[in-house]
Amino acid sequence: MTATDDCLFCRIVRQEIPATIMWEDEHALAFRDIEPRSPVHILVIPKRHFASLNDAADAMLLGRMLLAAREIAEGEGIAQSGYRVVINTGANAGQSVAHLHVHLMGGRTMTWPPG
Ligand code: DGP
Image 1 (cartoon, rainbow, N blue to C red):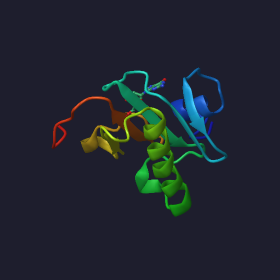
Image 2: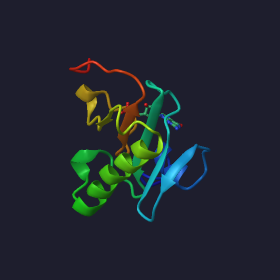
Image 3: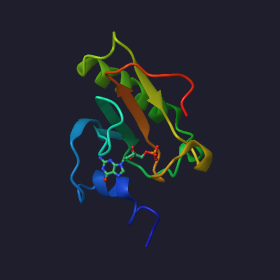
Image 4: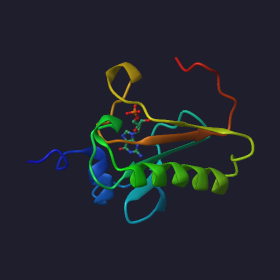
């Protein structure tokens, strides 16, 4: 069994687990977070498995994911009110799924710094 066989987000990429897909291209996929912490809470992930940001060196892919977050924010109507993009990386940051993902969050006022 490889790292991707039992990876939750790889399984979403393979459509083995249902998700509300918001956007997709050849290399990345965006879907609604199952436990939304804000009115808009969407995850953008690479289709290829990287355990975290520590493991991804593809600048084109990472840039595309950020641009996708901006595009989706525009589509969700939160580009002007404001939104946050977050990549939790590792234990101290609270990363709970070991497949790189960008949180796109908006639709409410947020505090800084995060807890
Ligand atoms: P993090 O804590 O940064 O690793 O964020 C993981 C997020 O993934 C968390 O906000 C909840 C979300 N999540 C976990 N399992 C699923 C799932 O099966 N489907 C969807 N859509 N989101 C999930």
